[in-house]
Length: 358
Image (spheres, rainbow, N blue to C red):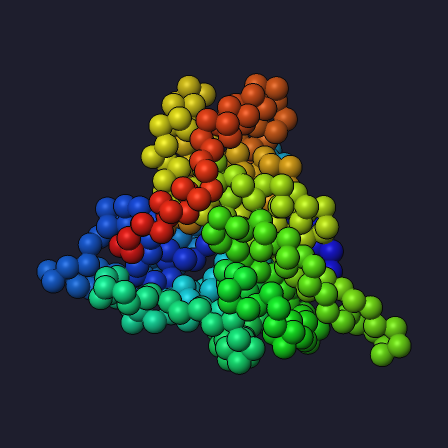
């Protein structure tokens, strides 16, 4: 399947930080409050669902106002939510919100992921060595989780993704899983994607692009087609290594989605991007995301905002991207930011692995 993402929403709401009480983004306690003995319920299920609802309200308003204005060339066409089985109750929150507000499936874009199971029992801090989520890319787990996803948001799903594919998990060589994913695409009509993480994201993506499965047609006319329609990758002003592979994916007709566009908050602490943002009077978050949207691989980008204000500011990145891509001054700014902020990929992921759940 060749994906033309021209009509797809270019900025969406990632639910990783809203669907569960803990995550690795910086400064969560300053925004959401600290879970202590004196305030144990500050991030309970009810509180987090209400927070998610408020941000989702803002997303619908942003898309409504953007659709009535043509000032920006990449204004979002419809609300886009990105969930995962391991993002706590993200699928439940999104599904209940959309049904409660009477949002029709054709009026929203929803993506989700399978492959991890949330096991933190709605806690922020766990014992030493205890995981918040457990990976399992077996066909048995896929068949289990696809039904769970379907029960929460099935009528809304447009894209279903393998969560953090790696060489070690076996997903790239397991023909049983490949066949099950292809069947899911045929029978449910969902596009199939994968997300990637780590310093070898580019290598994983290139290997995934080689996977072929039987397409539609009679037995005598069936042709091989690429399994994955989409890739969701970590790319930002700090981590730029996957860029060439993402260009290859886009040229092959894959939908390219960018996660962690602000590097879990680390991009906003980078001295150079803050200095350049101040010089050109651009909010740092909009400059960081705008630099991604302006890339040649025409990505779609997820906001990790956990407040309406965060989300609205992130949406301003669309206009910044127009400036960076179309104006000579903007092109110079884009080149300066990407050169000044680039990190070695190995160091980037080493630093990320040290981030604490909070």
